[in-house]
Amino acid sequence: MSCWPASAGRALYPRPRCRGRLETADLIKALAAIILIAALLTPAAADPKVPLPPPLPPGVAPVWTPVPPSPAVLYAPNIPGNVFRLHKKYYYYYGGYWYRGKRLLGPWKPVRKVPRALILVPRDYFK
Image (cartoon, rainbow, N blue to C red; front, top):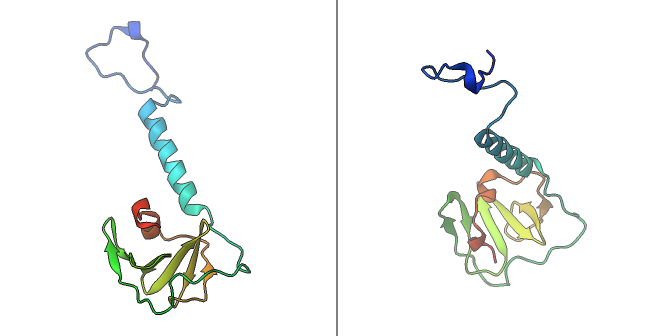
């Protein structure tokens, strides 16, 4: 199917889309998909040799609270560190990188692929 010129006089029929021509809405959708895929595939690697400060002070027990946009994620508003809980694992956001541990006090390992549920956590829940 080819593009009809404006002067073709076929106003009674819908004009077919031209091949090889993208409309603005299509370009915006494609760009948004590329950005989302790049964000999900970008590794959040950190130097595993750098010691991390403990995410919570001694003697303080975290009070886990669900994050509304991502209810599977829990956070502790009563501790100073950015610690989240997801599927029986702890995630610690420190220095621009994500770390994961089986216990709240570590040991922490760098996260190569950040779970989507954590990406959806709004900035308001970070300290």
